[in-house]
Length: 271
Figure (cartoon, one colour):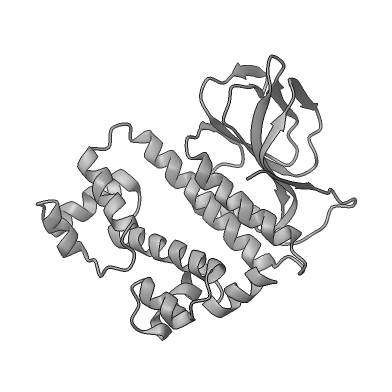
């Protein structure tokens, strides 16, 4: 799905998290974008195809998909003059952005290999929906979307640094992520891997940067958001499908992780 909206305000709006524009899978003709003074905000951009980028005084020609973050004051130089190219991007700024980057362990500027374009673009689509809806964009939801996006980027970079994760560990993570409704615990999972619980937990965290229980919580919250937005199931029914027999526990966990209650999140998405 291709999306695009862009509207810069002058003077620049203030706020915790402000988005000027976002694009997903935008196709460009053969060209190079040159903005020596940037656009006065931060720019995060994903290039799935080869492009030329300038980083500092050096020009590089990418051969793999890359994710690039520019600081507010940076100039922008990117593109491909030989052929059409795609990119997905978001222009943003705000008082909370430096803290969100720091909390995720990300630098103010980076350029890294990035192979999970689908996950990145899913977050950009959420941001697009929030800023183009009929209701005024909710700063809390935007902050949540960016905090989650930055954490995903940090985790993806960490995973990429671990070049050879054994197949059986990839399979156990896939099992956890695809069974959010099951009651899983470290003891059960460690038996599946023929390891002690402490050894299993340590290895899982070393390979994926999070605990196995945190991994399942991620899967449960992703499923919950999908069902809240795309189904007419009740909050209790959604909690059941996400592994929570007690709807109050489901609501507490959702609020703790997402920042608002399930019913509030659903109503905002439907506005």
